[in-house]
Figure 1 (spheres, rainbow, N blue to C red):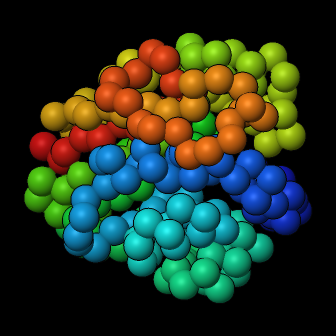
Figure 2 (figure 1 turned 180 degrees about the vertical axis):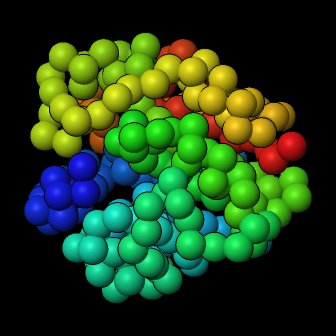
Length: 206
């Protein structure tokens, strides 16, 4: 999986410029759950498209090509596997994981590792394309360049994995309510899930 992102990192990064209002909508919904302060980590930081504007100082990613761009965007990044994080226990106040879960071998292992590096009552924030949303169904049929390698999850499945990994007290917000090409401004996030294609899930370390 690392090879596809290493080889096509420019294509990946350009998507956010091409789909600016989709990107801004995703930022807005993540802000609804992200803590306003504290030391954050993004697991699967990519080119820093979320960590940088959201004020997350630290990130990890397997792609050497991507992390070079993230570094230029001001993120302190190291090349590492999210299933084996290079940090001591209880280091971060919160952790962000956007889309990454659908590309890893063991999502549960990654969630357990993330829990390990979170402080007591630390918060996890996950962003996914909901498998059962219009957008998830579209991508599973279309097989887009990157998403053809993805394994899509439902919100309920992510919640189940989070409970097993040691998280509770769940929060849900959603955005992207129609075809991406028709989005002409940043959309307003809504509580819950079931309507929006992109869902954020917040939970706390038990």
